Image (cartoon, rainbow, N blue to C red):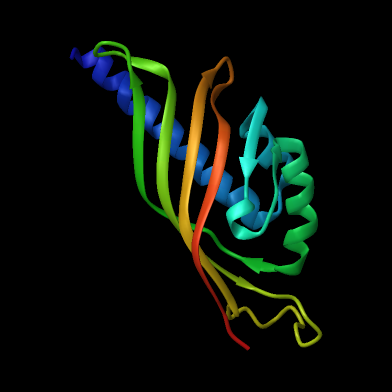
Length: 155
């Protein structure tokens, strides 16, 4: 590999990492416009393993906007990111896949929730599968799949 290809690969990896981080921030902040902007026009998401829906980015963003009202305090921790760039004979291609583990502590809204208590009483964890494509506007998600493996709820 040449230094130019190495640098392009590093830049791609940083840009992809920014998309994955942007995904977590958008969901945690409830910024559904930012969430939609992370996807290609034909992007899809699948939350069915966590009891959610599978559909277009618009359908899923609308569902998340409503569902996340149940969790006024939430934080995604996305770790162990394994990035695989398409390899075109030693040069990076225009698609990538990321596998990453997540831990998602949240606070359920309820009659006792006054907005000041932030201790989580619901935690979900598992693995995300992200598929991305290089577009004119940079790297964008084509697919996100949630593979929830466990959850815990406390009083």
